[in-house]
Length: 224
Ligand SMILES: Nc1ncnc2c1ncn2[C@@H]1O[C@H](COP(=O)(O)OP(=O)(O)OP(=O)(O)O)[C@@H](O)[C@H]1O
Ligand SMILES: [Mg+2]
Image 1 (cartoon, protein in one colour):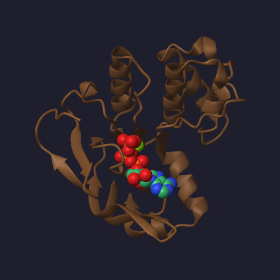
Image 2 (tube, protein in one colour; image 1 turned 90 degrees about the vertical axis):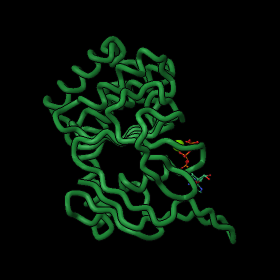
Image 3 (spheres, rainbow, N blue to C red; image 1 turned 30 degrees about the vertical axis):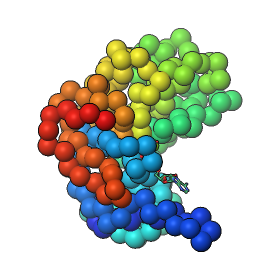
Image 4 (cartoon, rainbow, N blue to C red; image 1 turned 180 degrees about the horizontal axis):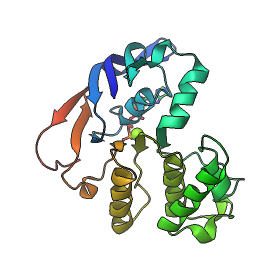
Protein backbone atom coordinates (compact mmCIF):
# COMPACT_ATOMS: atom_id res chain seq x y z
CA UNK A 1 0.00 0.00 0.00
CA UNK A 2 2.89 2.37 0.73
CA UNK A 3 6.11 2.09 -1.19
CA UNK A 4 9.18 4.25 -1.41
CA UNK A 5 11.88 3.82 -4.01
CA UNK A 6 15.45 5.11 -3.93
CA UNK A 7 14.59 7.74 -1.37
CA UNK A 8 17.31 10.18 -0.33
CA UNK A 9 17.11 13.04 2.11
CA UNK A 10 19.96 15.52 2.32
CA UNK A 11 19.59 18.54 4.59
CA UNK A 12 21.59 21.54 3.40
CA UNK A 13 23.05 23.98 5.88
CA UNK A 14 24.93 26.64 3.95
CA UNK A 15 27.74 24.82 2.17
CA UNK A 16 27.46 21.81 4.42
CA UNK A 17 25.37 18.77 3.59
CA UNK A 18 23.88 16.35 6.09
CA UNK A 19 23.20 13.17 4.16
CA UNK A 20 20.58 11.57 6.39
CA UNK A 21 19.07 8.90 4.15
CA UNK A 22 20.54 7.59 0.91
CA UNK A 23 18.79 5.35 -1.59
CA UNK A 24 16.21 3.83 0.75
CA UNK A 25 13.59 1.51 -0.75
CA UNK A 26 10.80 0.01 1.33
CA UNK A 27 7.40 -1.54 0.78
CA UNK A 28 4.83 -1.50 3.57
CA UNK A 29 1.85 -3.81 3.24
CA UNK A 30 -1.63 -3.33 4.62
CA UNK A 31 -1.96 -4.65 8.17
CA UNK A 32 1.76 -4.58 8.98
CA UNK A 33 3.16 -3.23 12.24
CA UNK A 34 6.46 -1.72 11.17
CA UNK A 35 8.87 -0.61 13.87
CA UNK A 36 11.84 1.65 13.13
CA UNK A 37 14.75 1.27 15.53
CA UNK A 38 18.12 2.96 15.42
CA UNK A 39 20.41 5.40 17.18
CA UNK A 40 19.45 8.99 17.86
CA UNK A 41 20.01 11.09 14.74
CA UNK A 42 19.93 8.09 12.39
CA UNK A 43 16.89 9.40 10.51
CA UNK A 44 13.84 7.62 11.98
CA UNK A 45 11.77 10.80 12.31
CA UNK A 46 12.98 11.96 8.91
CA UNK A 47 11.83 8.69 7.32
CA UNK A 48 8.42 9.07 8.96
CA UNK A 49 8.14 12.64 7.62
CA UNK A 50 9.00 11.41 4.13
CA UNK A 51 6.66 8.41 4.15
CA UNK A 52 3.76 10.51 5.43
CA UNK A 53 4.46 13.17 2.77
CA UNK A 54 5.12 15.92 5.30
CA UNK A 55 8.57 16.43 3.84
CA UNK A 56 9.69 16.11 0.25
CA UNK A 57 12.66 13.83 -0.43
CA UNK A 58 15.79 15.18 -2.14
CA UNK A 59 15.26 12.37 -4.64
CA UNK A 60 13.21 9.21 -5.00
CA UNK A 61 9.50 8.48 -4.99
CA UNK A 62 6.72 7.54 -2.59
CA UNK A 63 3.63 5.75 -3.81
CA UNK A 64 0.45 5.35 -1.75
CA UNK A 65 -2.13 2.90 -3.13
CA UNK A 66 -0.62 3.29 -6.57
CA UNK A 67 -0.55 7.12 -6.51
CA UNK A 68 2.87 8.77 -6.74
CA UNK A 69 2.66 11.46 -4.07
CA UNK A 70 5.36 13.55 -5.79
CA UNK A 71 3.08 14.19 -8.74
CA UNK A 72 0.22 15.61 -6.65
CA UNK A 73 -0.48 19.24 -5.83
CA UNK A 74 0.04 20.19 -2.18
CA UNK A 75 -3.69 20.40 -1.54
CA UNK A 76 -4.24 16.88 -2.88
CA UNK A 77 -1.43 15.46 -0.73
CA UNK A 78 -2.96 17.20 2.32
CA UNK A 79 -6.33 15.63 1.50
CA UNK A 80 -4.80 12.13 1.30
CA UNK A 81 -2.98 12.79 4.55
CA UNK A 82 -6.04 14.04 6.38
CA UNK A 83 -8.30 11.22 5.24
CA UNK A 84 -5.90 8.28 5.31
CA UNK A 85 -2.95 8.99 7.58
CA UNK A 86 -2.84 9.41 11.35
CA UNK A 87 0.20 11.25 12.65
CA UNK A 88 1.75 11.18 16.10
CA UNK A 89 4.79 13.44 16.31
CA UNK A 90 7.80 13.15 18.56
CA UNK A 91 6.98 16.65 19.87
CA UNK A 92 3.22 16.39 19.97
CA UNK A 93 2.44 19.75 18.33
CA UNK A 94 -0.80 20.17 20.21
CA UNK A 95 -2.23 23.69 20.23
CA UNK A 96 -1.86 24.92 23.83
CA UNK A 97 -4.72 27.44 23.81
CA UNK A 98 -7.31 24.99 22.44
CA UNK A 99 -9.11 22.40 24.54
CA UNK A 100 -8.41 18.67 24.37
CA UNK A 101 -11.50 18.04 22.25
CA UNK A 102 -10.76 20.99 19.94
CA UNK A 103 -7.23 19.70 19.37
CA UNK A 104 -8.53 16.24 18.53
CA UNK A 105 -11.12 17.61 16.10
CA UNK A 106 -8.46 19.54 14.13
CA UNK A 107 -7.56 16.15 12.61
CA UNK A 108 -11.12 15.09 11.76
CA UNK A 109 -11.85 15.27 8.02
CA UNK A 110 -15.02 17.19 8.93
CA UNK A 111 -16.61 18.50 12.11
CA UNK A 112 -19.66 16.30 12.50
CA UNK A 113 -21.35 13.91 14.94
CA UNK A 114 -19.57 10.85 13.55
CA UNK A 115 -16.12 12.21 14.41
CA UNK A 116 -17.29 13.85 17.64
CA UNK A 117 -18.65 10.51 18.83
CA UNK A 118 -15.44 8.78 17.83
CA UNK A 119 -13.43 11.41 19.74
CA UNK A 120 -15.59 10.95 22.85
CA UNK A 121 -15.19 7.15 22.65
CA UNK A 122 -11.40 7.42 22.35
CA UNK A 123 -11.30 9.90 25.25
CA UNK A 124 -13.20 7.33 27.31
CA UNK A 125 -10.91 4.47 26.19
CA UNK A 126 -7.84 6.43 27.27
CA UNK A 127 -9.45 7.66 30.50
CA UNK A 128 -9.39 11.30 29.46
CA UNK A 129 -13.10 12.06 29.16
CA UNK A 130 -13.09 14.36 32.19
CA UNK A 131 -10.35 16.42 30.50
CA UNK A 132 -12.08 17.04 27.18
CA UNK A 133 -12.73 20.75 27.87
CA UNK A 134 -9.40 21.44 29.57
CA UNK A 135 -6.70 23.39 27.78
CA UNK A 136 -3.62 21.41 26.75
CA UNK A 137 -1.30 23.43 28.98
CA UNK A 138 -3.25 22.17 32.03
CA UNK A 139 -2.34 18.53 31.31
CA UNK A 140 0.60 16.35 32.33
CA UNK A 141 3.11 15.09 29.74
CA UNK A 142 1.57 11.62 29.59
CA UNK A 143 -1.96 13.06 29.25
CA UNK A 144 -0.79 15.26 26.35
CA UNK A 145 0.74 12.22 24.71
CA UNK A 146 -2.57 10.36 24.96
CA UNK A 147 -4.39 13.36 23.44
CA UNK A 148 -1.91 13.31 20.52
CA UNK A 149 -2.67 9.61 20.04
CA UNK A 150 -6.43 10.21 20.01
CA UNK A 151 -5.95 13.04 17.50
CA UNK A 152 -4.15 10.58 15.20
CA UNK A 153 -6.94 8.00 15.46
CA UNK A 154 -10.02 10.21 15.20
CA UNK A 155 -10.21 10.00 11.40
CA UNK A 156 -9.94 6.17 11.49
CA UNK A 157 -6.88 6.34 9.25
CA UNK A 158 -5.63 3.47 7.11
CA UNK A 159 -2.11 3.98 8.34
CA UNK A 160 -0.77 5.50 11.54
CA UNK A 161 2.70 7.05 11.66
CA UNK A 162 3.83 7.22 15.27
CA UNK A 163 7.10 8.83 16.25
CA UNK A 164 8.07 7.75 19.78
CA UNK A 165 4.41 7.53 20.82
CA UNK A 166 5.14 6.18 24.29
CA UNK A 167 8.04 8.41 25.33
CA UNK A 168 6.21 10.04 28.27
CA UNK A 169 4.20 7.02 29.39
CA UNK A 170 4.83 4.42 32.09
CA UNK A 171 5.34 0.84 30.91
CA UNK A 172 1.78 -0.32 31.57
CA UNK A 173 0.22 2.62 29.72
CA UNK A 174 2.77 2.26 26.93
CA UNK A 175 1.89 -1.41 26.38
CA UNK A 176 -1.85 -0.69 26.20
CA UNK A 177 -1.29 2.26 23.82
CA UNK A 178 0.77 0.09 21.48
CA UNK A 179 -1.95 -2.54 21.50
CA UNK A 180 -4.47 0.15 20.61
CA UNK A 181 -2.29 1.52 17.79
CA UNK A 182 -2.04 -1.99 16.34
CA UNK A 183 -5.73 -2.86 16.67
CA UNK A 184 -7.66 0.41 16.28
CA UNK A 185 -9.40 -1.04 13.26
CA UNK A 186 -9.33 -4.12 11.11
CA UNK A 187 -6.32 -4.27 8.83
CA UNK A 188 -4.84 -1.11 10.29
CA UNK A 189 -1.21 -0.37 9.48
CA UNK A 190 1.30 1.09 11.89
CA UNK A 191 4.70 2.66 11.19
CA UNK A 192 6.34 3.51 14.49
CA UNK A 193 9.73 4.82 15.56
CA UNK A 194 10.78 3.93 19.08
CA UNK A 195 13.75 3.48 21.39
CA UNK A 196 11.77 1.31 23.78
CA UNK A 197 12.02 -2.32 22.71
CA UNK A 198 10.31 -3.46 25.94
CA UNK A 199 6.96 -2.51 24.37
CA UNK A 200 7.38 -4.87 21.43
CA UNK A 201 5.49 -8.15 21.48
CA UNK A 202 6.94 -10.09 18.57
CA UNK A 203 4.29 -9.46 15.90
CA UNK A 204 6.18 -6.50 14.46
CA UNK A 205 8.30 -6.11 11.38
CA UNK A 206 11.50 -4.57 12.68
CA UNK A 207 13.57 -2.25 10.54
CA UNK A 208 16.81 -0.75 11.70
CA UNK A 209 17.68 2.74 10.46
CA UNK A 210 21.44 3.23 10.43
CA UNK A 211 24.37 4.30 8.24
CA UNK A 212 22.04 6.37 6.02
CA UNK A 213 19.97 3.29 5.15
CA UNK A 214 17.60 0.65 6.47
CA UNK A 215 18.05 -3.00 7.33
CA UNK A 216 15.35 -5.58 8.01
CA UNK A 217 15.89 -7.35 11.33
CA UNK A 218 14.86 -10.97 11.47
CA UNK A 219 15.59 -11.86 15.09
CA UNK A 220 12.59 -11.80 17.46
CA UNK A 221 12.93 -8.71 19.64
CA UNK A 222 16.21 -6.89 19.20
CA UNK A 223 17.69 -4.43 21.64
CA UNK A 224 17.47 -0.73 20.77
N1 LIG B 1 14.73 20.19 9.70
C1 LIG B 1 16.00 19.77 9.72
N2 LIG B 1 16.98 20.50 9.14
C2 LIG B 1 18.25 20.08 9.13
N3 LIG B 1 18.67 18.92 9.67
C3 LIG B 1 17.75 18.15 10.28
C4 LIG B 1 16.37 18.54 10.34
N4 LIG B 1 15.69 17.56 10.99
C5 LIG B 1 16.60 16.63 11.33
N5 LIG B 1 17.83 16.97 10.91
C6 LIG B 1 19.06 16.15 11.05
O1 LIG B 1 18.82 14.91 10.41
C7 LIG B 1 19.39 13.82 11.15
C8 LIG B 1 18.30 12.80 11.45
O2 LIG B 1 17.35 13.36 12.34
P1 LIG B 1 16.06 12.59 12.81
O3 LIG B 1 15.26 13.53 13.64
O4 LIG B 1 15.40 11.99 11.63
O5 LIG B 1 16.72 11.42 13.70
P2 LIG B 1 16.04 10.34 14.64
O6 LIG B 1 16.54 9.00 14.23
O7 LIG B 1 14.57 10.52 14.64
O8 LIG B 1 16.64 10.71 16.08
P3 LIG B 1 15.97 10.57 17.55
O9 LIG B 1 16.08 9.12 17.91
O10 LIG B 1 16.86 11.42 18.38
O11 LIG B 1 14.57 11.06 17.48
C9 LIG B 1 20.04 14.45 12.37
O12 LIG B 1 21.42 14.58 12.08
C10 LIG B 1 19.37 15.81 12.50
O13 LIG B 1 20.26 16.73 13.06
MG1 LIG C 1 13.22 11.10 16.06
